[in-house]
Length: 387
Image (tube, rainbow, N blue to C red; front, side):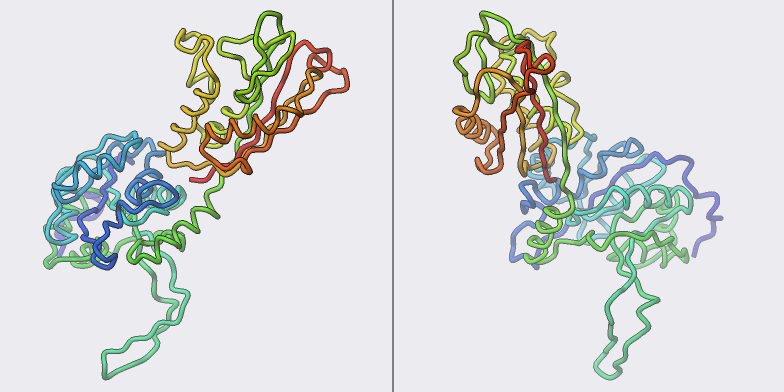
């Protein structure tokens, strides 16, 4: 039992590290490594890590895994911007987590299963805050279905209102966790049990039912479905360029015969620029001025379709897929309708999506404003992505 006062073991700050438990052998997946299984285009382990990267308090990710998988997992986590430390896993989950905890150095440790790819921002925030306030946080959800106990001789249905499903993250003051290790015996499959063994009652933090653990192949299908329905993001883009002589007019990657062209540092493809900004905006990744600054000579006269391919690569690296996009070009002249299908096909190829996911429309402004007077061309784009 604990001999120290709990108050002495409380965290001094919210500075934290994520410990990802990845020592399992996926025996119920038929030998397939579930942490590498793709979910909407990204490995399960990547999706388990990515939501934690949005928290400045989380300084580092510690991954406990078999040494022979270090390089494989490192590759699967390409695009994760937090520092990552690999430590050897043990024969049991408790040994694996203990190895990682001993390598940690921040005030709070957040222990999460590498097979839980749908943890939400809200769950992470609540768990981190509760660990700071109470010294521990066990993400859980109330039992909503009838359960039954049976040991072969006795059988009954307990009151489900007193039962909870335990999930991760499970977050702790690092000093409290280390003290619990010293004051408990046995080997545990759950970190809340470790605290129980040391005589400490962990704090329950309410979580989401969508925070499922991938255990069998059917769970992968459920995760795909939940990501597709719950993680849709929308972005808007707008751009305008001036029409001048002696420039090509390029819209949606298609050269349009006209006496004037658009002025800009690159090829000034106003349609594609609006599209790129809508995609980056949906992912909260800035805009094309940040990615391709007009002060950089590398992008002077650049083909905007090639820039679009780079934007799509950035989205993919951050775990996003394009759902669809709708673009409106505003131009008094020239007439664009003969070129719209070619624009859609060109953009779809660059984004690696079906042409049916790309809408391009053209309109005039009835002679009003700078577009109506023929001084320039503008474009609006709205895009949906999922992550």
